[in-house]
Length: 549
Ligand code: G6Q
Image 1: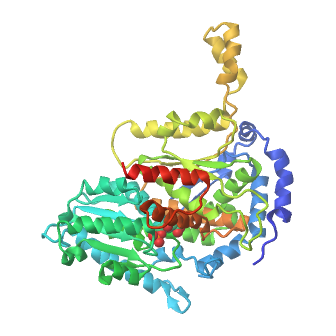
Image 2 (image 1 turned 120 degrees about the horizontal axis):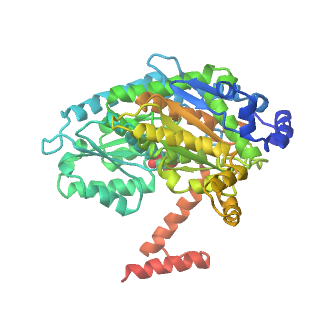
Image 3 (image 1 turned 135 degrees about the vertical axis):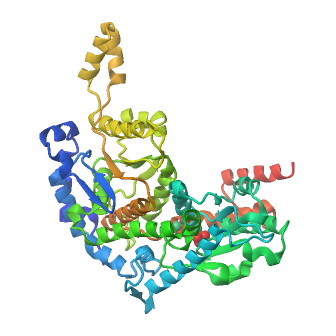
């Protein structure tokens, strides 16, 4: 469907007039004026709670944003995605990561293929395999059980599993140590190989295409390392693959019986739910992996059925759009107040920025508004002692998503109250700030000389009025993690619909890959140097010179 340019739509224009005034609203006043603001601007779904009240928005703002979502056809496009329509236009593919977490027996037929049956057939194989590895009956070539699992993959074949394995640390198998190698930088592989023993190590080569240069080189290196100790015939007990490309897996020397397939309708950054999550299932067991899928499915059902005004992914997307468009927020900071979510910001970076970091619409026209903000972040409270200074007092407004669990999965005394106190204090501080009058009164109470009070005043004043969302869950469990990831997946989808960008491709990563291949040949001296610019030529010359030293 051809969408009109965003700025020409009636709902956008209504929002623009509203924003002329609303962007200068003071949140302190909004809270003072409406004692019901918290219950009015919070919602819950699938074990998650969202508080979006600390934004420069009121009921009218939300109403206008919901009008925009309706005018852009969010509901129809959501239904098109969920039913398997080929909404990935530039690659002519369906987008069906939601099918990966559908309960067994649900009907979903796409192109004559029973998607649900295919998904569950692979899940059954994952259950059998992971049970064997975990209960110690899958033995290495010298008859010992597996102690170390190395996932070799990059991008979507690394970020999701790595993030989820860390997040579910408390549920992990005590014997299995999980490792992730993604970078083509040999230091990454070297660091892992130096810790593991070929007799007890299982390698998962995770690559949708099985052509990705980094993964193929890392897999070859692992194979060579393994064959220094073991024989070719031992490979099947130590190398398994996750891919859509059976031929390439066979050509690599992995038995197709040891290959866990998935499908082209699973985007890399949406693939942790597929066999790409094999490392997660190995770490936490198939039972918890299933509850991880169920948590995501609960969020899918909420997204599919909840009215837009209570629809958590829709609300999160609309608030994000509002901040990006009308508060000029060029970045979004993710602050998990949970150490086990330490890789969650990196995971969201790919999800959001690879999906919506686009400058043309689905029909190839230049977009007429800014699109995806830069996504970044770190765990609280570490982030507070690093860059929160800029967020409080810098010149840009950076919205923040705080994420926390009400209950810890450890029982160390005192820590969790301290953690949550910091989380809630920060969102309060960002919202309220500290006025010059408040600072003056405080400094005077300390009996500082008048001149010093005035000199310190601008430094100690906090502008406040800085937007944030808070997402809470009872505990970080496989189910709430599943729901949390699905929440952000759908948020990304909704924003993509509003901007009318092609959220499911990533052509922007191709140019660098082509040039890298060419330069790699030049560094190896296999091809004559191309005419690069003087900077690139100079750098290549330096690298070649270093090789002969
Ligand atoms: C994600 C991207 C990308 C992809 C990697 C790895 O959406 O498509 O990050 O996951 O390039 O690709 P392979 O799994 O094919 O090796």
